[in-house]
Image (cartoon, rainbow, N blue to C red; front, side):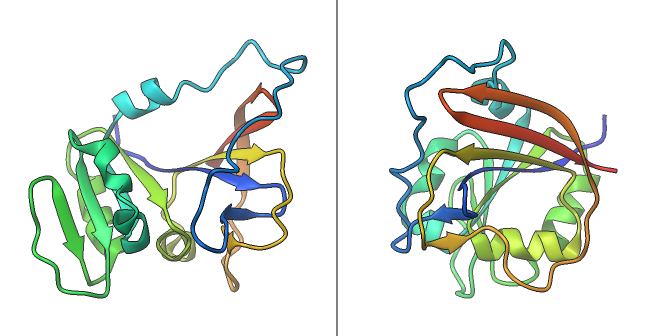
Length: 174
């Protein structure tokens, strides 16, 4: 089966993936399970099908890579940093590196974040699946998911789940 590049993240209703300071403590449901669907998004199962994680330097600085010690982690950075253990620092074209990985045998590739890294993948139009958890909050300000001047990318809603007010939408390219 061909590897896929999968963006999986949470956004506020007004389109932010983090607060201005990079915080994400607002990523919680509303405590109401009356609209929950039978279908649930299983993050653990999602991770079982992943062997590469891609993130930006801000995510790395917040130690978000610690959750992925058994995966190959690529970190996009403008700095020259020596690779160590499972961590690979890319100061060049991260999309090109990941497209090369995609052609190799293996499991799927998890596009973790942040916004600038995700933006380069959107602009290159190489994301195969978008899994977006819409959190029931309007942040008002923060770090946006979508930056300007993106290509038009037509999607198909493949699956959805509702869990405690969080709507999880899984789109594939059409």
